Image 1 (cartoon, one colour):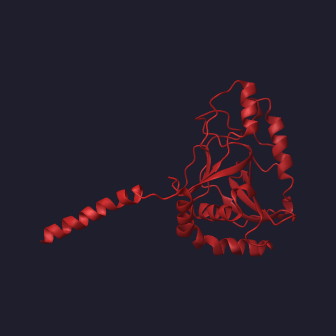
Image 2 (cartoon, helix red, strand yellow; image 1 turned 30 degrees about the vertical axis):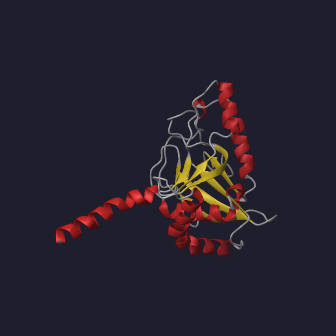
Image 3 (spheres, helix red, strand yellow; image 1 turned 60 degrees about the vertical axis):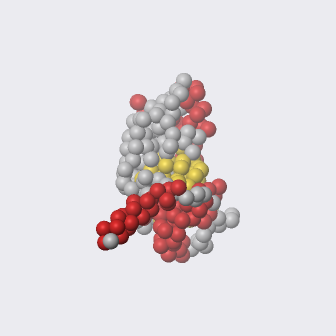
Length: 237
């Protein structure tokens, strides 16, 4: 009898993952579940960041400034017509490639440019992730001119500490950013990825091995970065 009981328990345990996987959970339900499981524990941290910066939480818009050489992401925010305010700095937990834009599939490069976040991924093998719209219109336009076809894709902002062209910020940081992005909405998030902080110095990229259109890209990135006042960008990491 005892053996039968143990066998029944073992059968139930073994079947549990299958039952969970076969249940009809919508993407929105999975996202909400991830927020409840991971994000809500981190919301007090976010509230404290915004309180310190003097910005109402949640804000209307946020911006993520990623600097590859410095290996950090700065979080900025604003409400309505307010100026941008620096909120917090997240260190990158992994890095791949070199300074310079992503040009092709499997080159391990982190893209450079002005991007958006397009999707929440609560199923990520990297804990949680947010998809980046690489290649964007500029990337595709330059690739067409260059005759490049396989540009790669599936670039994410994600957790853990591994990168093959993505922005890895660790589990704690992605919990906060996943929740914050959900609070403000994907349409209210902008992502600027630069080789280094172009507000402080010229691009540190090795120009000898880069495409001829790179100055145009860096001019665009620099112009976008200038909306964020340098004197406010002290790290709080």
